[in-house]
Image 1 (cartoon, helix red, strand yellow):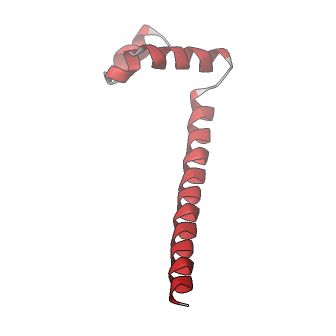
Image 2 (tube, helix red, strand yellow; image 1 turned 90 degrees about the vertical axis):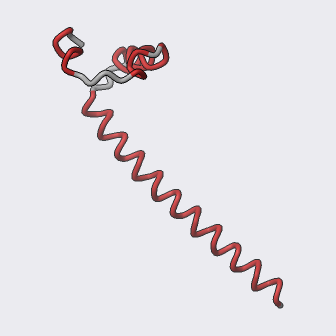
Length: 72
């Protein structure tokens, strides 16, 4: 990233931490582009939301089933 681009970005403390610098260097080395990262992150986020919803549904159904078995 050039100096011009660095100057236009908001200053966020985590950008200068060692783990973010190492992670960004590694992602650059393996050829990950900002666009592909953004599209993959949205896919991962959508998958996580679906998984969380499924987990809540399973817990709710299991609790309901356990309560109905206790009454029997």
